[in-house]
Image 1 (spheres, rainbow, N blue to C red):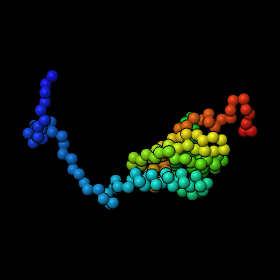
Image 2: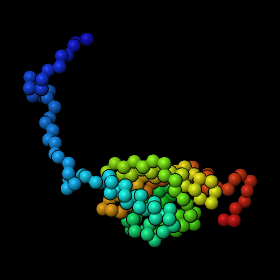
Image 3: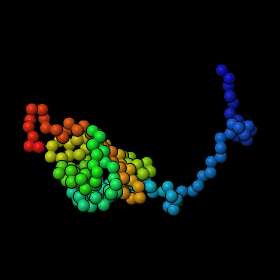
Image 4: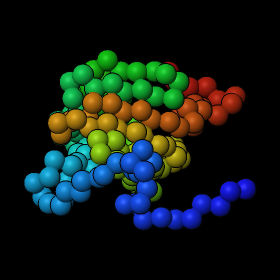
Length: 153
């Protein structure tokens, strides 16, 4: 095995040197500053409106063309259809963890409805202050009646 000894960058051949990196000071006017915070704020405001059963307010955070997908591949064509479904369940959010990376926000939470709480994970994408995509995963059987029990639906 050949041993390589560390050398100062100036002594290396130009073909093996890493390209120079220019660092810019971060300040409030930098285009990347606040993008994670603002995306997270949009998502948390949306969830806060749903949690407070302020459904019309929640609609304000959704883009008209929002793409909403559930664990079985189901989707909703309009934000109003999705919010109406949420209105029927009257869910309460118990946030466990929130991750933000630029325009992407992931929320891990328990959603308590008329039945027991269900653990869920939702991935939100935010552009220009509006949620443009929501992808949620959870165990759909949690919303089914127990085996042997009939439902009115």
